[in-house]
Length: 348
Image (cartoon, rainbow, N blue to C red):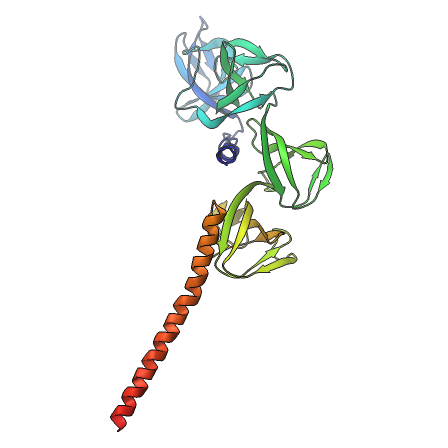
């Protein structure tokens, strides 16, 4: 379960971040000018830097140029005229920790391993298809790997790297892939997921493999294994659309197996975000009850990690739902009888 949670966190953490001009943000590094004549940097107004002047590079415009901000203005810098002050970058507080180690799937030879997370850094080795490496730390789009005595950074996006995942997904709608159409509510295991571009997963459907986008349009969500006690009568539907066919009506205080959660994105007059459980229009649970599966929105419920805890809560809440109203009714009856007897005595 911890692995699934960690992978989900990994899926959610490294979303692509771009500047207004869609240049890739990299781990910022300090660089100095090495050109004897200095160098011109191109921006709103071109500027000249002298040899040994230092600047902070925070964007990778391409493999030959980087970007630096001076007085909030972006300037283009030629990598050939600079070098990093710190020749090698290891693991520090600015590098994200993926919590667990992921085995990298290498699908081509001669992938550069660099001393730092930017193309300007010196090459220290290569990855090949027969190499077996894992990664835990990353700075989008680079991952930090160790290959024997070689430690360094690989551009995971540029080299189209995947990692082994074996996580179960369910489709929230029909999706079209190179393997054909995959129906809603199809459960499958993803053998691989993109190392950095978290939207992309490898779908294995009827023996056919296809790379599809999972999180970007919410067409697939990760399968879970939790238990829910519903405190109100609910209906489960065939698809996440609540106007779809009703599969089953479930009485209150029943234990449901929670298989997935569908956090739809929304936009309204108050802004945009991820739907909360009370948002009927955008938030769904995929549950199983007595062998039947379907989608619903829950408003009054509790989630449990174990079946025993869920059953105990369901029984307790059901007894309370009967006992408390009974006590109230009994109290009212006793009070009415007492009032009646008191009135009769006064009448005598």
